[in-house]
Structures are given as C-alpha cells and as structure tokens.
Length: 228
Image 1 (tube, rainbow, N blue to C red):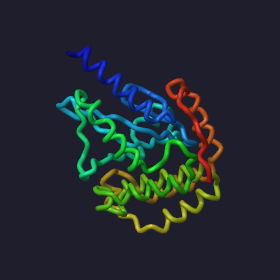
Image 2 (cartoon, helix red, strand yellow):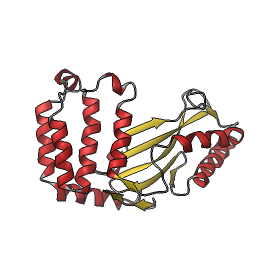
Image 3 (tube, rainbow, N blue to C red):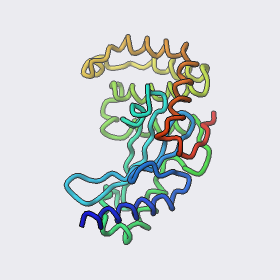
C-alpha cells in the first residue's frame, strides 16, 4: 500500500511537471523556478489526516542568510479554488480523473505566468492583491502587512536603489499599528531604521542573493531575470 502511494505521488509530480515545463521538480511535491531575486512555483501540499493534496502558488525570497532560511517561509502562499469557489481536496487515488479539471482552474487562476518574463510591477501587483485577501485584509496596518511591504522593498532594491527609495517612502508614510507590531515583539522604529540602512547596503544584499542562487539545493532550477 505504501509503495503504491509512493508511485502515485511520483506520477502526480510528473503530471504537474509536464503541465508546467517552465518549472523544475525541486522535490516530489514542489516545482520551482528562479525569477531574479525570488523563487516562484507550485507546491502540492498533502492535507492532514487524509490521502489528499491541494495545489498552491508560492513565492519565496532569495535574500535571506542562506537557502534554508529563504525556503522556510513563503512571501506568498496562494491557494486555488474549484469552479464552485471551494478549496481543492484532490485524492491521490483520483488524481488522474480530476487532473484536467484541476489544471484548468490552476492555469486560469495563476497570478503570474511561468512562461513569460515577469516585471517588478507585476510582482508588486500580486503581493498587493494577496494583502487584500482574508485574513490579511482584516488588519491593513499590521506587522504581517508590513512583512509584505518589506518584501516589495527588497524586490525593488534588487532592481535599483531608486526603486527601493520609492517603496521605502510609501512604507514610511503608512500609519502602522504599533500594537500589532508589539504582538510580534517588533519595534516599529527599529524596523523602519533597519530598512533605511539596507538601502545603503545594496551591494551586500545583491551578493547574498548571488550566493544563494549558487547553492546546490537550487542550482538545477530554471532561471529567468526579473525585469523593471
């Protein structure tokens, strides 16, 4: 039974890989590509206490201290919905029967095309849309929203210091909820100061991204550049 399930998962991964040849199979349930300073792709997440899975669109940073930290927490983890607007729950046993329908929904709902070049503005738009979806939308001035804005700042810094300054000004002008920051043991003033300091350490920032891209864990991934 266990061997049969393993073979099913291999077949499922192959189906997704064939459907999205622009992505590389990173592990049995993860398909990624490198786009500039981020990793984007799909994850087939096993649902708890069942033999079902659910596909997600993901974006990870490449500017953390090492590749393990980069792939630890996604910037975006966006689920796809069925035609009826419900969450997917795809049985491993019924994957072959359901795959065409699931693939149609995923392709239609993808926030970014894996085939085409991606611009900074397109990526910003995806992050902004993600920030407006519950539960994030319930607290627009929270630290969790600030984390998304910090990701935009880092993406902009990858493009240029001038673009990063624009995002930093937007962050500084926002009326952040200090109580929300305190819940995460984050000092708002220190956080803002840290972003300003990063602006002057762009070379070091770019060097860390370059080091992470060369890590053996992700060196096999397909690569495309992030354009302005």
